[in-house]
Length: 212
Picture 1 (cartoon, rainbow, N blue to C red):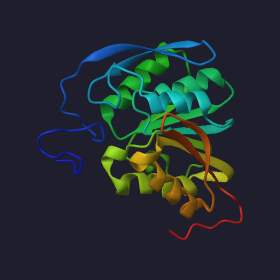
Picture 2 (picture 1 turned 120 degrees about the vertical axis):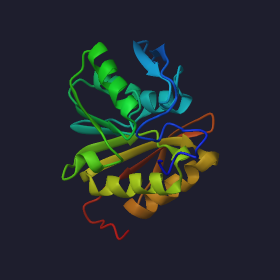
Picture 3 (picture 1 turned 45 degrees about the horizontal axis):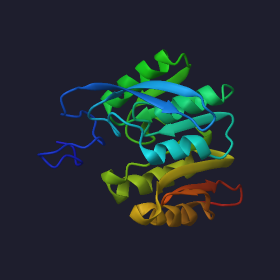
Picture 4 (picture 1 turned 180 degrees about the vertical axis):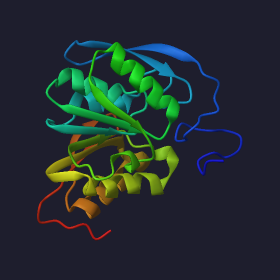
């Protein structure tokens, strides 16, 4: 049994969700008017709707380029939309949840994008790789250890000058996330605020060495 399975209810941060599979079609309209469609499966985060924090991150992330990792990608809504809006980026996506990865691949094909999608916990699929940007709506429900490891691992998997961008409700765990980003990277800023939700950005500076 997964450490994230309480025996009665399995949330989305598991390898094998035990929720019977249901699929809903969802529609995302960006602030620029562009419209995207996705298949959203049960047992994967934000089943059947676009999570507000995810929508804010997609619409208001800082400029990105080069190699971009969408970690904890779910069914792929963040990474796929970013790739469609920024065709020049080289996109990578991963999730611990096998059903999420399956549907991320389906949605990538449906949206005609080229992306490397892998299954595994946090940075396990990306050993030895570094990225220009890492972006995520972190899985707070999975507990403190997971989001802390996501932030620590980001430092090791970013190029000098690269950024980590995370979104969260500031008063529901987000403030702790920002504080830990500052502890690991030596810097963290709020680049967008809306409805209690904030996007936090940390930059990997060449002179900074993680001691965590």
